[in-house]
Length: 392
View 1 (tube, rainbow, N blue to C red):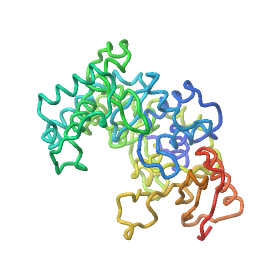
View 2: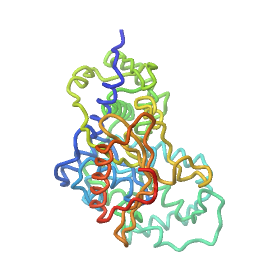
View 3: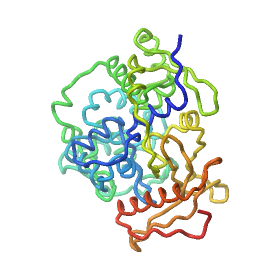
View 4: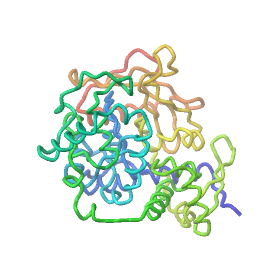
């Protein structure tokens, strides 16, 4: 029979697996941050900085000694590398040997798309790689933009398509970023030799990715496992699960709406449930791209929290706002807040606040939120928190 897991226990284990059960105290050394990233599997990168960029915010939510730029240092020191999961991300360097199949997947995906047609000629592509080999790390700004126009994705110049193709295919690697602009280098000049030398079969790569996705999820459907890294197709994950039936546990997860979802879990699931702590009662302002929030379907199933980021929704059609942060208190999502930082003025302004249905805006809860806003202000070196006219 399948192991039944209550909604409360499922939420508790998921938050523990993703590093949000404990208060985010402690140091933020290279070692500490690599522990956090290894536990998460990866940290998603994003250019938008309303208060802080997603990757910085995600790490700060787990280590409040973290400061902007620390993640860049991990990449520069070759402890981590950049590549594409479901989006651009930073992963521990130890994962690189298991990521080769993703390079192949991305290469094949691009070669079968209009992206490949938007690239310059083969001769021009060879010249781009030769320049990087001879001159060292270069950014897209180091190449003269072609006057050729393209209708593809955001109308990027052809050389940018070429650089990103080689980056996705693993020929080039991110050496570092300056002002968030990526600098490309040959992979052998970025990835440590001993890491490049590891040759792991595709079957073992797939097995490792599925096992480690499930370990970080705690439990999950085959779709959850596939979406975690997005480095395998769903049919591949289903075939893996079928082969591993004897070592996986069938579980039934009670969802927030009382429905039940069948899922898979590691053999140690009972011990993990017993060891998972009660989450801190601290109120946290999470980033829209936080790992706990990223899979919107899983978020809704476990927490009954219907969340969508509306940055691509026309202003008149938004339900909430451009960049709205989920509020996590204990093991519940209790609301969402729209806030932004004006770093030059030294102000963190709260534009709007919505408590979830059934959540009371008690003085204690409001105080928790105010305290977290003050912490976030210190994180981005903004000391003045201002509440604009709104319901509080």
